[in-house]
Image (cartoon, rainbow, N blue to C red; front, side):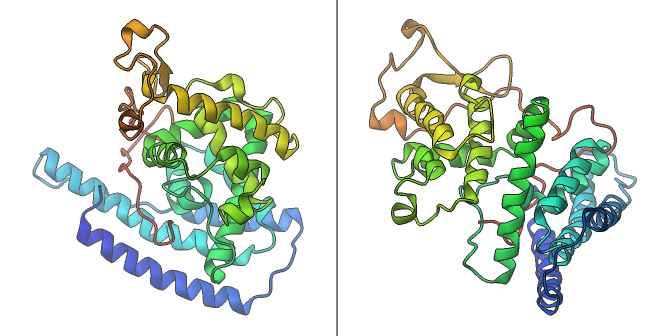
Length: 330
């Protein structure tokens, strides 16, 4: 984890950059641009973000402590430059979110690993669910409104990528597992008995009950649901068509949610991958099918074989895990 002092300094500087970016955005009226113009702008920012390089130098002392400190300094510098660049891109492309995020995600998932992680770091709270169960509040101030619209566009772009090539789901899931916090947070909400994913996705009672749902946010929750299916070995519940009407996909979500609440206490870390699996033989289970309140409040077992890097076939300087804490994260 990044040193506390350097992290606070980093975040303070980022907030200054964000405030300046917001002021610039307020002076610019949102307008639609043609696809070629949007692509040129996005690729320009991607080039700036991926060009952020800092010296990685452990000095003359060869030790784990020295190397860890050098890694923290290295990636803190990358974040310090990359994060404000992405925020500036959002302000410039407000109103063109869908096109912008399709291009940005395409670049992030198809670049070299050293370039990909820089694009991930710059936009992590937008392109991935971290500890945030729901997207940003679109009824909050301007910077949150812009961030919300790009979050939804990112989820939509990810669903399109997954629908065109199912292998992308494993790639996105790898990032979520590498970050770690998303799955734990979702488990707390589901077993806490407060939220219902099925209702959030379908919109039934959600607006009055949770004050979270809207038709756009459906895309955010659906993307998260795909991750949960992979995490629990229930890929059979992943919708065949991610463009199906909301209520049809909500039925699959309801099935998963009931299954998870009943069997949660009998889930173990899969020995062959970074997911949980159900103990099928009650003789092997310490709970023997029981799901009392004490077991429901315990954390899920720690996952085995967590990925060391967010992207496969890694080359170059290892990433700091977790990447960073963003000032706008919920």
